[in-house]
Structure formats: C-alpha cells, structure tokens
Length: 94
Image (cartoon, helix red, strand yellow):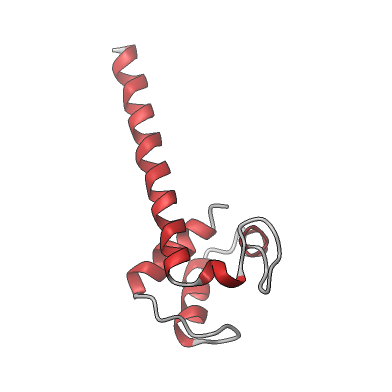
C-alpha cells in the first residue's frame, strides 16, 4: 500500500512537471520569452517578479490574461485564450 501511494505521488509530480514544461514551451512559442526571462529582467520584467507582484491576488490570472489579450499596457498577444491561460497559470507558479 505504501509503495502504491509513493508511486502515485511520483506519477503526479511527473505529470505536473510536464505541464509546467509545456507551458514554458507555450510561452516561448507565443514570443513571451523574447522580451521576458524567467528569473532576470530583459526588455520586460522577469516572470518571477511579475508572479511575486501578483502573489495573493485572487484575480491575478484573469487580470494578466486580459492584459495580454487586449494589449493593455503590454503588446497584444496573438496566442489562443487557452494558451494564454496556460502561460499565465504557469508564470504565477514561479
């Protein structure tokens, strides 16, 4: 029973790690990483800094997705709504 539980946690960790990697790949494909880096400022703020700024804000995902979609204070993104949600969700976990 114990080994089954451990195997379940390992599998869940691998699945979540894959999702995080996929979202980083989506951010790269959408062009986000041309101006932003995960942990340092480039042309745009570091994604970790943006995540820290919105930490604890329950509306952060919706706010950031809307900014990217509408081009409010940021160049308008051409990524799909689904991809934007995945990218923002990943970024907020950094």
